[in-house]
Figure (tube, rainbow, N blue to C red):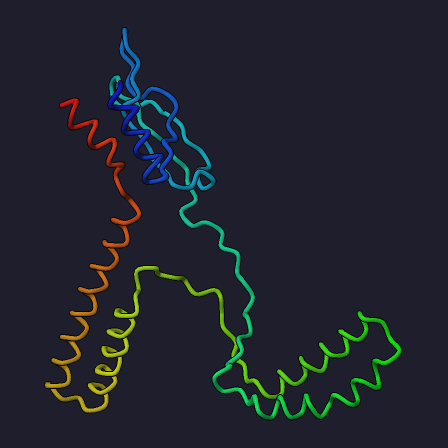
Amino acid sequence: MKQCQQLLDISKKNAFLVQTVDKPTRITEYTENLLDLFFSNNQSLINRCEVLPGIADHDAIFVESSLRPMRVRKPPRKVYLYKKADFDSLRDELSAYLPEFTDNTANISVDHTWKAFENKLKSLISKYIPTKTLSANKVQKPWITKTIKSLHRKRNKLHSKFKSTGSLKDRRRYLHAKKETQKQERQEYWRYIENLIEVDPTYTEQHSKQK
């Protein structure tokens, strides 16, 4: 019983998994035991979990789960490209606007003064700082590092070259790059998974002493 509780504690603490079966699955004349478990890291996806009659004294688990959670789509966002901005022209026009700004805001409140300056600044930003629109709905893969992205670009370039030339040499170079990219990506993926699921060292030490 102690080992079963330790399994549940480790699953919940280190892997953020919750056991959803709450009824015994093996019932005899004298005992009732919960032998079959169903873990989930997102309880909101579990619609139903029941124990159904199975074979002999061993019952079956029926779980109805939503395999795909509802994902809220975020609207595209505008990003300023400051490296391509024309700051000299922006400063010159903002300086030229100073006399007009002083005259127009001489007898108005602080709030209206700030609003006038803000509107002018926003118009100059739109005029002299280019932008691009980014979509926020792409599925992010945390294990795709800068190194992996570089391998992707190299692989894609070799693929384009092979499609253009059709030579066997370019084909071999592309296939080699593809294989290496897949290998490195798998390694990064499992390294990422291992970092997510870390066994508590205090429990490992205690467990070793018990043995």
